[in-house]
Amino acid sequence: MEMPIVLVSSMRKEPSSADRLSLLLARAIIADNPDAVILADVKMSQTLFDGVVDAGGKVDMCPSGHSEVKRAMRRAGASFAGEMSGHFFFADRWSGFDDGLYAAIRVMDFLSRQERPLSELCDALPQLVATPEIRFECADEQKFSVIERVTARCAASGEDMTTIDGIRVREKGGWWLLRASNTQPALVARAEGRDHETCGALIARIAALLEEEGLFLPQIEGFPIRSQGSDPVQVAGTIV
Image (cartoon, rainbow, N blue to C red; front, side, top):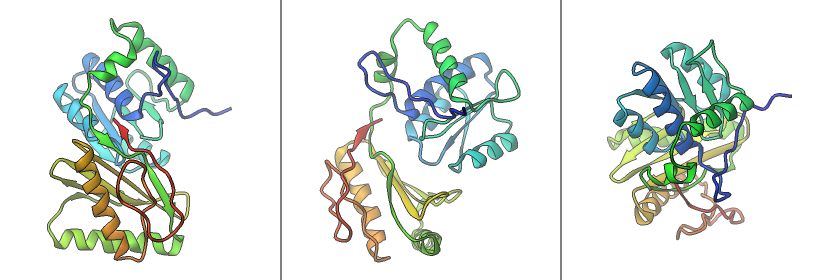
């Protein structure tokens, strides 16, 4: 049975986010091979990208999705890639693995060589405020055109943005993402800020852009933005 995704829990019985775990694994790989290239999908925390650079590594962003990540790894000759979904891809020791059991073994191998537990290693990373993945319905025949129009408006206003998979816009103190799901009639959003106020402002930006398209962001627990369209969906903000 295929088990491509791994979920790791700390001694506190709290799941460790894929963002943090990817950074810890990437650092270990860079320590063994300073020339290693690391990839992470567009939904990943900025902490990961900055952390790889701080560790002296090379990092790049890639689209979300199993096939997209594998294709990007082959192009870049990457040694490791992580997805926010908890999908980890290793190509540093052999030709390549994206199996959950193998990823779990690599995590255990990494932790066996540390003097601190996983919870303390994660606590030592920068603490930012982020939403989880926010997924909401949008018809297949509409979702890509919505992304195209939002991208065009952001480009016209000179935003600092990446468009390899939807649109990821970097603003002062954080970033936000809006993309079309590869597998469902849905749009996917995420925002991350240096603090709760900044993250809330980024969510408000996404909501305003969607309202221009006649769409409404689901309610997000802990933030003041409320949907005026469909029934509210409770989504908790998290520290990553």
